[in-house]
Length: 113
Image (cartoon, rainbow, N blue to C red; front, side):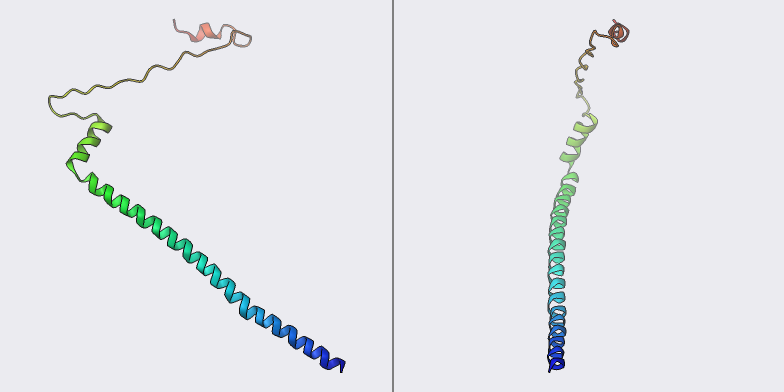
């Protein structure tokens, strides 16, 4: 009687392991593939959006008005008869050096005036 009981326990254990292998592994694979598909779809949507924006930018860059605007802004180009002016940035503030040792005398050496 003990052998039969042990045999049934073994059959039950093997059956449970088999069901877990058949049921759990494909389910995990399904969810992993579904997640991967969702990620890939999101990346595709982002790339489609960027492609649309780039296509629109190409169309803008092919117009005379945009070319002129960029030439004026980036290269300072002007039409004949016009004058271009450039405003230079202000000079950096003077360097403040403390009047304590090891900086003693350094301010006089750095100041060109």
